[in-house]
Image (tube, rainbow, N blue to C red; front, top):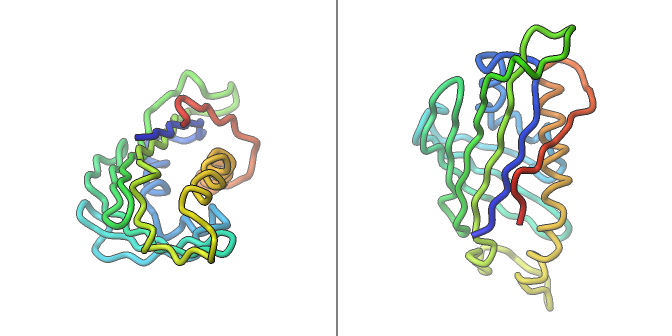
Length: 173
């Protein structure tokens, strides 16, 4: 299993941050590769989200289920189709990290644990002569850039303005 664990600061309280983390339907604004999100449920634990992804000549719909929510600190999820993956968005108060002109701060963590080789090749319509291993080798190096873009745009939404963020990489494959 591979693991990605990243974090950054948002200059808001966990109570102000968590609704943004929880709002999966807004995620297409944060990444160029997520085209649409459809929700099945009320957004609480048990809700399922169809995440339509597109990259290069590939398109794929990941189905993610929320497995646990503890506002304002944790949202756990796992994929329920074609790939062994699970993760968590975690928000922790970190007021001591706020700059002098800011009232408070929270650390936002994104964690994903996945087995890239568990992907069902039949779920992807791969172009002729393109293997799943080739796709994995091309996608994995892009994950950090993609994660940074998502987190930067998420923080801009939370704070109401864009700023340069510091992404801390705690663990990466």
